[in-house]
Every structure is written in C-alpha cells, then in structure tokens.
Image (cartoon, rainbow over all chains, first blue to last red; front, side, top):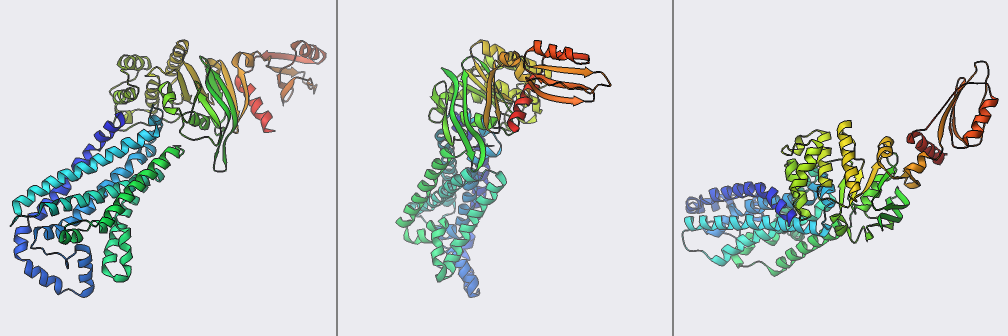
Amino acid sequence: MNLLLRELNINKKGLILWGIIIIALVSSVMFLYPSMADDAANMMDMVNGMPEGVRAFYNSAFGLDRLSITDIFGFYAMYVGLFVMLLGSIYAIMLSAGLLSKEEGEKTIEFLLAKPLTRREIVTSKLLSYLFNVFILNLVLGLAVFAVFQIIKREPFSITTFLLIIVAPFLLHLTFASIGFLLSTFITKSKTVLSASLGIVFLTYFCGIISGMTESMGWLKWLSPFKYVEPADIIPTGRIDLIYLILILIINVFCIGLTYYFYERKDITV
Amino acid sequence: MYAIKTTNLTKYYGKARGIVEVNLEVPEGTIFGFIGPNGAGKSTTIRILLNFIYPTEGSAQIFGQNCVQDTKKIKQSIGYIPAEVSYYDDMRARDLFQYSAKFYNQDCTDRMNYLADRLDLDLNRKIDDMSYGNKKKVAVVQALLHAPKLLILDEPTGGLDPLIQNRFFELLKEENQNGTTVFFSSHVLSEVQKMCDKVAIIKEGRILKVENIEDLRQNKFRTIRVDFAKDEHSDLNLSGIIQKEIVNNSVKVLYSGEIKRLLYELSQLNVQNVTIEEPSLEEIFMHYYEKEGE
C-alpha cells in the first residue's frame, strides 16, 4: 500500500499534464466540426481527386471510405481518434515501462528490495498504479469528450456508439501499458526504455496502416493493436469484434503474467 | 541459533564466478567482519542474503529462515547499507525515512531525530543535493531506523570523514550492546580490527579462513626487523618464518614460531639491531592472500 501510494503520488503530475494536452487537443479540433461538416462535400471531392496511392493511405489511416464526416462520430474518428489513440498509447507505454525499470536504472531498487516486501507485491503495486492512471486518463477524457459532443452535436447521437469509442482507446492504452510493463523487466536503462516504448507504438501503428493499404499485407493487422479497436470498424457496426476483444485480453494477461514470472526470478544487480 | 548461516552457497553469473561453496556461521550478537579484496565475492554474498540475486547452489538462512522463501519476514528484522548509495531524487532525508518507516508499520520519528542528531545530518535537505558523505549518513540512518536485529553493511564507511566514522562505529557498538548482530563487509582492515569480534576472509569467491580477532592477534605473529653488521651478509633461517624481505643488510620477517628460539638464533648472529612488533592485520591478511595465490 505504501508503495502504491508513492507511485500514484509521483505519477500524478504526468497524468495531469497528459490529460490536459489530450483533452485540449481533442476539444479544440472537435469544435471545428460544425463548420467543417457544412463543407463536407468539398472535402470529399478533394479526397476523391487524390492519386490512388495517396487515397489508399488516407483510407487506411483515417477510414475515409467507411466514414462520413458529416456524422459526429465519423468526424471524431477521422480527426481526433488518431490523436487519442496515439498520444494515449505513448503516455501509457512510457508510464508503465518506467515503473519497474526506473527503480533499477536509478539504483533505488536496493532500498526497496531491502524492505519487508515481496517482489510480487512490488509488481502488484506498480501494476495497480498504471491501471489506475490509464483508467483515470480515459475516464476524464471520456467525460470531457461527452461534454464537447453535447455542445457541438447537430442531432442526438447513440450513447452505445459513444461508449464504444471511449472504451476502445482505453483498451488500446491498457494493451500498450501491459506491453511496456513486460518490456521493463528486460530493459532497465531509461533511455533505452524510452526509445523502445516509442518504437513499439509507432511500429505497430504503421503495421496497421500498411495492412489496410494493400491486400497482400493484410496479415500485418494482427500485429497492430490499433487495428483491433479501429473507429472505422466500430462506428458503422456499433461493436468491437469479439476476436479482437479476446486478442486484447490475451495480450494483457500474457504480458502481465510474464512480468510477474520474470520479475520474481530475475537477479537484480545494480 | 545463528544470525546468518550459509551452506555451500554458490553463485555463478553465467560462467563467471561469483562465490563458491561459501560456508559462514555468524553467531547472534556478534560484530562479524567480512574481509576481502575487490571482486572477491563480498557483495555477491550479501546480495544473496538479501535475495537480490538467487543462489546457483546451496542455501542461506537468516535467523533460521530461508533467504529465498522467507525473505519478506527476514527483512522485517534487518537493516542494510549498500556500498553505493542512491535514493529517490524528489525526496528530502525526512521523506525517505518516513517512507521507509511505513514499510515496517512503525513510527520512528524520535529515533529518526536521535540518529540524525548523532550523525549531524540535516533532515530537510534534498538527498539529491547532498554530498557523498551525507548521502552515506542517510543510508546509515535509514538502516538503523527500525531498530533491526541484524545489520548488513556493505563497505559502509566509504565517504565518511574520520569524526563521523567514529560516531558511526559508536552507534554500531551501541546497537550491538542492545543485541543487534552486525555483519560488516570491508576491504579496509583497520576498520575491522577496531570493530569486529570475528572475521571471515574471502578471496576469489572462497572463504579462506574464519577467525576470532583476538586469536588472530594472539596468533603470536610478530614482525621482526634485524639489522646486521655492515660487512656481514647474513641471513636468518628458521622454521616459523612466514615471509621474508631483505633490504641491504636488514631483514624483515613475519614470524609465528617460538620467541625463545628466535632469540637464541639471533644471539648466534652478528646482529646490530632488532625490533620486534605486533604486525597489523593488514600484514597478516596479505600473508593469507599471498599464500593462496601461490
């Protein structure tokens, strides 16, 4: 408990900062919706006039072929969803990857391990702290987006779909956080942790985009958690595919389980 | 019951040797020195005791409890000073001590103030801004704060000035008189000489010898320097001479035999001057190191 409280306390600043940045970005773009939705026809003409390769990229990255920006969800998915998914994932993976590795990198682990505390308890405290932070970030973000939607909506919107587009990035952030948590049992240098975390997020993101651009690379989507919760899939169908939910569950359980397994067994020399 | 007991404790880092078949018995209530040069395996042994690393073979017990399975219970009753001190960069000394005390569910405010006062430590300074010596003081207070039954100290005196070092030793002795066992690793022998009841000597991962400090000193080791007359190139040959150094006309030996026979032998030679003195532990240990090295 002592350790958990300490973790929550030191990660408070990061949470507030990232929360403010993401919410500010999301709401400032969303407030453009009323005026841009009016000009939607021009937008679509512009996209249709693009060379085919560029259009394929746009379609894959933003789901332009499956969404309509006159619809509030379509607009959210195209202009905001990406920020929320990318920035939130970067926040989540950098947070979680630092939790265990920082103690080793800064050699404070010798202090912590000499206290009456099992390694399992250390992992559990750190796990709870990132679950809490990611949850709070998404909760506050969800509330903020809901408020913005209420202000800018042109007609009533589906609450179910709304909840889905809020829960989807939450699941994505959790997944990256769990991957980062596992990563940090192997990598303990803070610089390496940082670049590895960012690398994973961007690499999987581009795998997702490439998978949507050409048929032959379609299998790459399985490597990209972004594809599991793609707004362009969720909004038209009103649900997240079960196979993706199962995959997300498996990745999270697998990463967390392995983190416990390795952390309890590893030799810690600093 | 022993405060620390290890049985054939062995650790390899991959193929690199850490320690090999270390058998140690540290009786409760003693101040026990653990002496060896750098890389001999002192820290490795301590890290196994604290379950930072896992033994390759053998086992270690603290107060009869297994260092791997019962590590949480064990840590309730031990304090540890690491060789290199690093703490959280956002904390003042006071914050660290309060954080530490909470892990033991104790209120240690009085003791914190007492210890900080004894070591002349400013509780309100950020640890990150402190000098190396002051950080070490933080480590000392942090280790003693919860009144542990066993103190494990890994080269604890580095960076402390002689005045504070003395106060630190006084503190250790006080703790020891209150029943705390102290396990003390060092390569500075004079420290050990001052403090310890017993020492174990470790070299290249193996325990060479475990001795009472008193026995070591009463081992009748003597350093003897003999100056011969100028024109006489004489030498001293006697069983019991362990180490011999010849410079010009003088001979310096480490001797552990009978003094009477030595004196008789000397009387037969053309001796100009003789000094007989008690060797420092340093010299005795150098002898152990070298003997093993051959």
